[in-house]
Image (cartoon, rainbow, N blue to C red; front, side, top):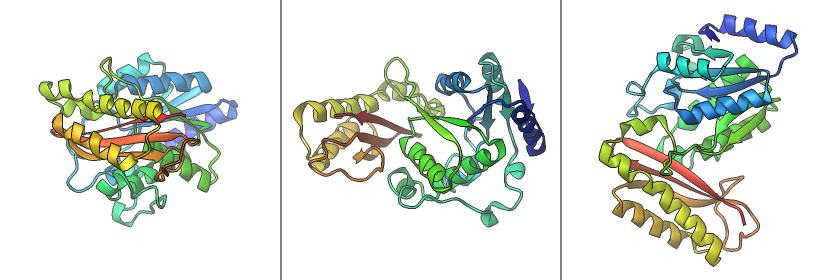
Length: 285
């Protein structure tokens, strides 16, 4: 497994693989890897000849009061997991390598409409940071495939829109959310949970899945009333809800009362202590 932190070295290795006509898959991460990340790598190995994993805690996607400094950095453990998973190359650039121009002066990528709703409304500028760094990684690696988890459903949709709008020749692959046995979506930030909070955390998925099953079995379409009820359930369980909302899956638009034919998604974000948990479930009619 190659460990590379220099853009020059990365490009040289990518050029060598390209010359050999090998297909390349990219799995972008911020490190502190769990089994969900490794499942993305394992899938990437099935669709490409070479797999690149990036590990970069991107300051541009963190707000001034967010956990950039505290975000867990576990590079030694991450590299061991990636080597065991047969990753070909791990790219671990510094901030200076990725942002040679001071960040406040750097070019940024924005996906209008999708970037300022839901998590984008709660975390202003977050998705500009995400789109910018993912676009940079796409330009550096020039992958044939890129694999992302569906836990951050809004992020995946934003990256799909960016790829389509900028005509990037990349096949994006979304993989189902990887869960703990009790249903909690795996996340690097789950380590912020206390023992007691960890026991409560699966309630988020349970409430979303309950709402999904209710919509499927009753035909009820009073979405606002149902969302309010789900928020109240979360609050009663000890969470501080940010949002719970039913949206059209491919646009994140608000559904109408008659949207039976479209695929919907229920998205949620909620605080439990220091951890901001996000999750979603799809509704296929």
